[in-house]
Image (cartoon, rainbow, N blue to C red):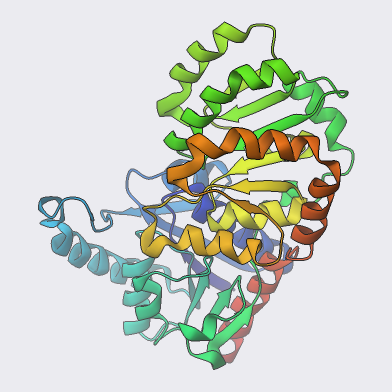
Length: 366
């Protein structure tokens, strides 16, 4: 029996790759038992059970860059999370632990390596965080999504796998028609998909709100994932454009349908979003979140821009630049096709399966 703990979460960008790895392990190996470890109160505590897996929560949060006072409880949370992780490991007896990033990943992998359990790190970004740099010293394998990661990790431990993506978006063949019906769209009109991450993106949302007159004027359809905090504002703004086809969602569950119908995608540059855009080969305008740790979203976006595979707009400039950039791209079929062609070259379609094989290899060699 192969027993694996997968730890991490916080956002969909960590959770969905983790679930993809778990699904690949179940498909490849008949005898496998998987336990997830996440952070109490975070999205994984809902999404992981919905995917059919058991999850245990740690009372852990990240360091707050804006408020030193909020960090007073951090050492206690870290200590108790490491202690609980050790208890979980003793009880579950995993052959391997996998860290996908997020608050819970650090204490769980630290505890595991201290107890002699081999660890695999799945580093999603082109610029790793402090925790993964620290854990890399003890990890057996580090699966990365970008070239050049030997700047941060021991070269002999690195394997280039790409980031796992949700199974349902790997093949969009035949889904455009279903997507048009699902969202109530017109096949003869172009469609923009806006995804500001699972929690929404205020700057992108404000810029899109200001673009609504252009959507109406140019007869462009919009699927707008706002996140919960901005949904009511977006719905109120859309009321003034009743003749336009604008679909407002706080969260889109059928992302395969959304990708299938989109001509252009406006998105943050989280690792999971970037990897999905590569797999679905969509022309993308990326607006990196400027306060992400070590500004890793800008690094992620720049990795695509270097290959002429996406357009980057700085967060501080999205309000003034998004409208012209977006509608110029929609009007330029040749440029869109070139972006689609280049982004597809960067796709890793079997990342979850490769990582699952690495997990089993570590277990066997141990």
